[in-house]
Image (cartoon, rainbow, N blue to C red; front, top):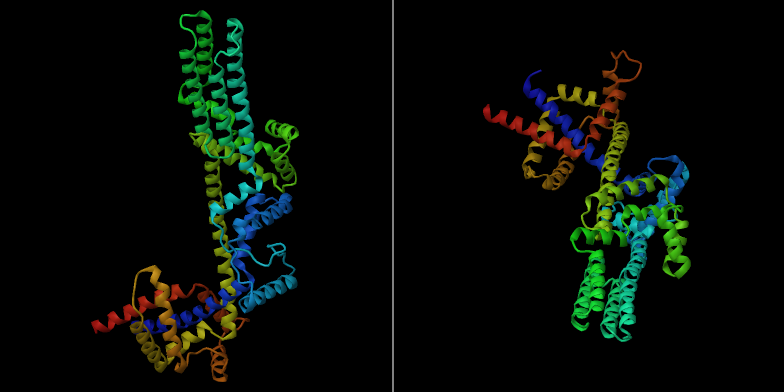
Length: 492
């Protein structure tokens, strides 16, 4: 067998595989759309992420996934027409999917809904998960209460004791009254601004310390000079100020006492933890929003493996964060990375499953159109007219496509080639199909076949596997073979 014959044989097989691959890709895309493979795989991957691949917590993971999918952030990703004639295709597709799940007894992964998004950004997932646990609200309320306690126990009460002791010693009940009132009003206003989230925790504490410094300076100006009682009171005030925070590390330590870290906050999922008891005490005393949050937390479906994962992520985040107030943001970023890593693995699983489906579709198509690789190769080897026709078609296809090495333009180039194939193959008698002549030739070629299984069965399997490789793969090979053949012609 000489080289030109091998090249022509390769062109014929590649052209056949390319044509069938294009059709198989369209069929697989239609099936995937009807059965929502991508959306369903994403949903099941999220459930697996939540339960840690543990069968013991499957129901809790499914319930939590339902809750996440029902959040406004994720629900807004599922764009669908829902009015008039535009919703008809959607209803038909969902009806087919429902029929499929009913026949094969497959659980609807979307719960009471009929569909879900095919892609969820990691930031959207992380935000929805944190919001479902109300971690931000718990942190804000606990921080508010602790900040109020800090102001009362380490500023208001000690300063009032110092001033009252001075008033009692000097028999002057109005001593530092305007200054103290101004300080208390400033701290109260600052606390309200923090509750309204107009200032951050760090800003609140820094401003409060600045207000305390201003009060001490006013006391130095107002109190009588060279008076031992005044000097004693000022010494106590300065000592009080130094005990709060002087350096940046001391300020960070104060902030850590006020704002619970994410690692500490996540222990609220355990009813026996100190922070849960702290939240419970606040709810018993004040009621309000935190009581509602605790009630929601007690009914929250939360797999044990997810709790452990979140605690581990929070501990890692806490070690990396330099500022206390950044822990929630850092925790959210860590969840995004955790989700991205899991979805990358899930994407690999989806590709492997898709490849298996592509092989099944390829074999089914090869059987349906009777595309037997061995028979096609035999015909190409013995039929010069067929080879010449294929050579002519491939030359016309090559000239109609604009060659490019840019992957982004490969799909557009393949579309052009697909159209050209459809136009040129109408008159080409490829050795495929179930026409009587073609079947007769196949049976004749199997006369000396010794295996109990007909040769065409192996031919269908080879063709099916080839089809599963995809149109892009065969088109790339076809371009190279055409290039080799053209180069050979130039040299001749």
